[in-house]
Length: 113
Image (tube, rainbow, N blue to C red; front, side, top):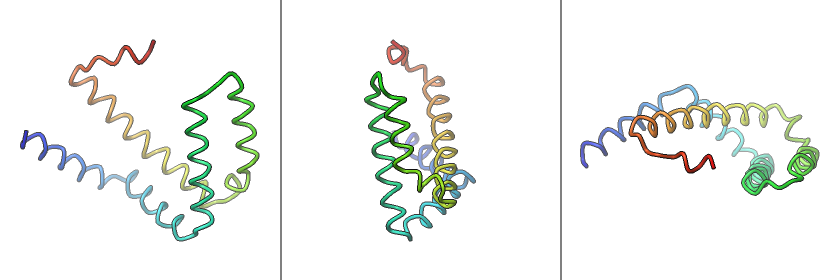
């Protein structure tokens, strides 16, 4: 197990060297320095994630209402940069996760049903 843990530490170090990770962290620190913006982004992210997890028949309408409520974030350059960086970072992590699950042949087909 020690070897596996060392390999994981190495992977984490490599991830921390990526542009995606560093851009996300940099923008996160900039956003955190503006308390109100950070609070609004956090609220939007929480509500958006909850809505996606518990999506109902009126998802599109709820999403449109959420977008209108947080229109100020769409018009804020720093918020837009942060959301783009977060998306790229999460996409990279998702690709790594998928590659890992396929490589170790863990059956996740039950998730598709």
